[in-house]
Length: 252
Image 1 (cartoon, one colour):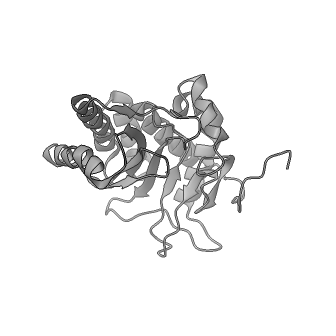
Image 2 (image 1 turned 45 degrees about the vertical axis):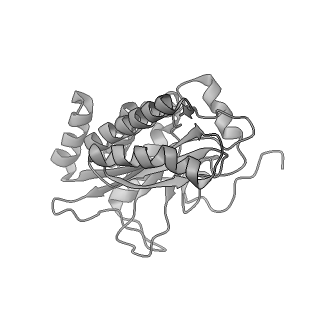
């Protein structure tokens, strides 16, 4: 664990008796000869075996919307462990691509006519007994969740160079769907920067930060997310009202 990341985790525990629990969805393109089951298995079966050999907490590997686009979803773990997992995922996929002489691309928008790729970070805060402190009913949000949303949105503008590491990455925002268009939060709203996935248990919620591009530095992104949460908790920053519905262009 980097010194800064270690300090952020320590501050959350010391000041608020809260422990961050994180997971991620990392999208990429692997340009195979075709998308037949045989071609995909030839690449992804060895990759999955390498994940297992490295004891990576991988939940699943999915085919995504784009031609040759895939997504690797991790299980929930500590921020430090998630950092190494994300680094290992990229390393293993890249190595397999080199061995098979195919392209593995973690660019934010590698193909103009295909969907962009993101690195969605999931977070909840647990107490000393491991109980999730992110709660939301129809009319009520726990302080931990509310202030976390407020802090993350307060820091969003300043954090954009971390989440979009190059100017070319901003073309990702031109996608029509499945990219953050609203600098706000919403329940199951993929147009929002911060999405709270729809789950039936009001006492088991999480924040999905949808802004980071697939090529962003995972360490800097994780640190930025925890920094925003700490700021929100320390200053008790209230978030804006929830955003509902689809993003509408200003010219519409």
